[in-house]
Amino acid sequence: MNRSVTISLLLIAISLHASLATCNAQETNRSLGLFILDIAPDARSSGIGDIGAATAPDAISQRWNAAKYVFSRQSRGVSLSYTPWLSKIVKGMNMGFLSGYMRFDNSAIGISALFLSTGGIDLYTSDGTYTGAIMSGEYAMDVSYSRRLGKHLSGGITLRYANGIKVESIGSSSGGVLRPSPAFAGDVAFFYTKPVDALGTETNLSFGTCISNLGTKMKLSGDKEVFLPMNWRLGSTWSISMNKNNSLAASFDINKLLVPPYYEKNITIFEAIGKSFDYAGDFAWSAGLEYSFMQSAMLRAGYHNSENNRGYKCSYFTLGAGLTYQSFRFDGSYLITTSNISSPLSNTFRITMSYLWR
Image (cartoon, rainbow, N blue to C red; front, side, top):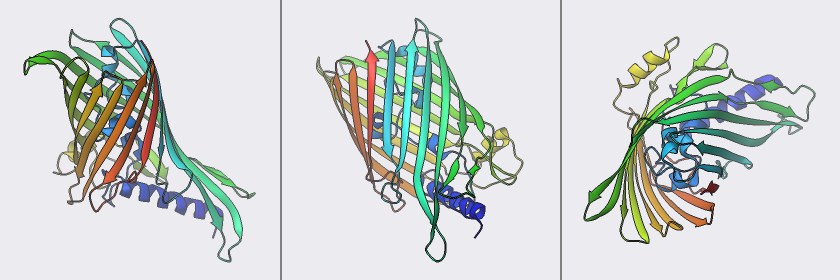
């Protein structure tokens, strides 16, 4: 078989498998580009069921809602996250996420970079002769600006550059590089937070929303163009200070995929968003709890459930923990699938290390 054909077939197989394994993309007729943009890359949010629209601000807020940066207690922060990906199927497959922000009086800027490596795949001829190897990856880089719009309200925008799979053939003179077209996208987000007297104690109620990955299509092969995983996320968090040392935060997110479940050629982004509401499915919801002791030790638990228009369901529990030492914070999470359709991150640990300037 011709080497370029072999690489193309492997690319299609990898992309299709990952898309089918992802809970929000069970339709064989739907094609999405850069599915990593629809995955929780950090251990804190993934520990509470993949929630982040209205949780307390941290260095990873850009992934979920950049408008939260304005209300961060710390003026600056950086974070690095690592996630093994399909480790039971392909060795060396992993995802990394680097993010950071700087807050001013009434505004903030943030940056982040996301990279997925699918590891190496060896190639052999029909008689077992080794002919080389391929490697592939997806990446995205973005920058955000957020600003306070009122005492309790803020808004933010994010601009993103992303590219799909880059393939390098190793160990053969006939090797080459295949690249899909790059994509440019943006997010629009709002965040509202306010102290509320309830239950005779100090509480805080927050709401957040973010429409993400609105942008250009990606051309994967030939003349076929696919949408990025455009999403609309709504969320709320109720934080309760039980006493001086103990607090509890309950969070809930709803997510709507803004892409039609069936591939259609030559439709615009706005047409795609409109048609996505013609189908009852493609909604996901998550609920989670985060317990904090002296703002130094955290325990987390969450549940995520999604369903598409054909009735396919994907659900899982998540567990997480965090530890803060001076300006450092370490977070970890673990995912347990509870449905017949398994998450590609099932039985996987995710870790995050952050540094926050106080």
